[in-house]
Image (cartoon, rainbow, N blue to C red):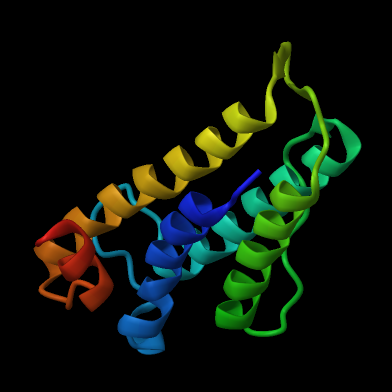
Length: 142
């Protein structure tokens, strides 16, 4: 299965780590929304859970935290790991909770997960006065 749509969505999220200076990663931009650092760790963890689940046939949360190799590297690694896993998979169904999902549904969930958090942080960035990633401006015409 082609994973280009997932790569596109994940790279939009990854662009936050490139655009926003690291000095802002530990600042809560909006009440009740975690910091960028927590978002990056969360995204890496979930991507790894999906990749492992596609390989084993069972998506199991909560997974484990990423290695402390640098979040930008881990964001890129987790994007490629999940994309390559999708492209090489022959899985017919993957268990997620009580549901049996097709590979396409898991990829759709991964893309949706990226988009949900991008929407949250678009609002947070606008409210805090920080720059919106250029890729977001071009891709979404912001």
